[in-house]
Length: 192
Image (cartoon, rainbow, N blue to C red; front, side, top):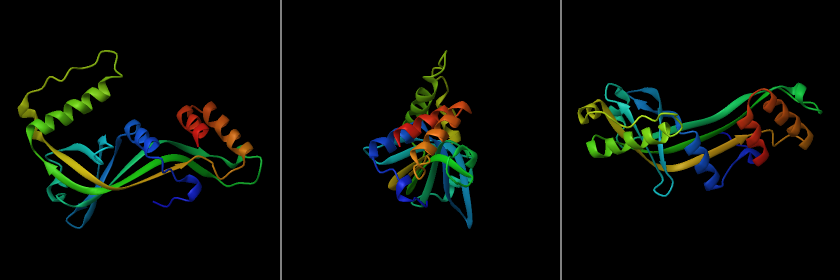
C-alpha cells in the first residue's frame, strides 16, 4: 500500500484497536492462477501476531492456501472530500482508514479449534445485540467450514484524514463529515 509519511500509523496499540474495531475484511490469495478474495470476519491475536477466521468448505480458496503468502485488507469508514470544503485551493479526494496485513496462511479442520473460532466470533458480534444469541449448533455443522490461521509477517496502516491540509481545512472537513453522518471519521480526525 502506498503510504505518504503524514498518513502512516505505526503505533501498534492504535493499529490493534483499529483491527479489532474493523475486523471484517478481505482475504486475498491465489487459487490456480487467479487472484481470489473472500470477505470474512477475523479474530486478531496481537501478542501472537495471528489472524484467524474460517471459510465455507465449499469455497475453493482454502484448498491451495496452505503455506501461501496472503494479504488481508481491513477498512474503516470512508467518504469523499470536496475541495469546496477547503479555504485554500484543493482537489477532490477521499478520506479513509485502512490496514493491510501480510502473512502466511494455514488451514485447519480441528473441530475444537473451529468451535473456539466460531464461538469467539459469535460472542464478539452478539455482544452489541439487544437479545444476544447463545451458540446453539451441532458439532456436525462445523464440518461445513475450514479454519484459516494467518501468521502475520507485516502490518501497514494508513489513516488518510486530511493531515496534509492546513489546520483550518482540516477543521472544515471534520465539520462537514460530522454533519454528513460520518461521525466516526470526523472523530478519527481529532486523533490524527
